[in-house]
Amino acid sequence: MFSKLRKTRGFTLIELMIVVAIIGILAAIAIPNFIKFQARSKQSEAKTNLKAIFTAQKSVYGEKDTYSAKFTDIGFSPEKGNRYSYSMAAACTWNTLTTANQSCIPQDTVRFNTQPNITPVTITAPLSAIGASAGPNGQFAVAAYGNVDNDSVADAWVLASDTVAATAATCGGDSSGTAGAPVNPLNDVSCDQ
Image (cartoon, rainbow, N blue to C red; front, top):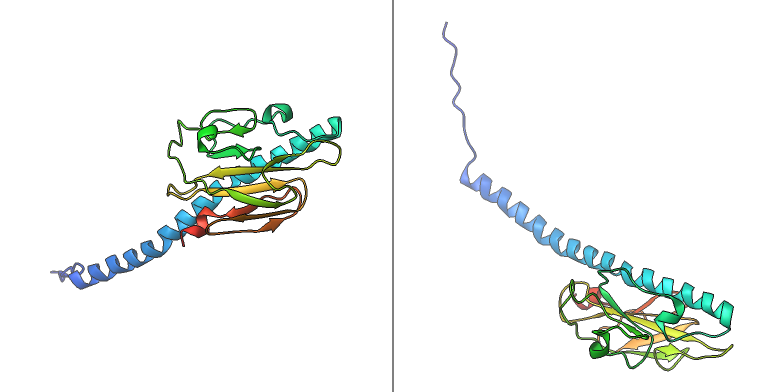
């Protein structure tokens, strides 16, 4: 007895093209969303470090009844590989952020050597600029600038000892926040949309 031999068929070109088209459409939707999600996760560095600065400032204030505009006074230093530059002085520009000083901490220029276009953030409360005012009734505001998605726009975050109102010249994000809560007046992720 002879068994019937079955003829096997492969996929047609049309079937393969339909599968490729479906994969292409899914990739076109998924990749930008993944990149946006990845950029948002990189922003957590700024939020975490700004909250650490807030805690350190509150500790110094508890001991000395004054805030400081120097990172060395509050004992703050970010881990190596920091994507963001941190500023406690209005005079911190990219040029001053490339070398560490007491009020300006640069990003890790070995790992992140692309200079973002830093758009200065305008603070209207509690201070008129990034920095600290001394004394028992003092206040402070600190800023973080970084590039989360390797374009020319910088991400900007602000945190203050009191309710803060902050604005950015272009592509604004949040405009106000409460004491100790990071505010994102220049959101690099939403600027790309």
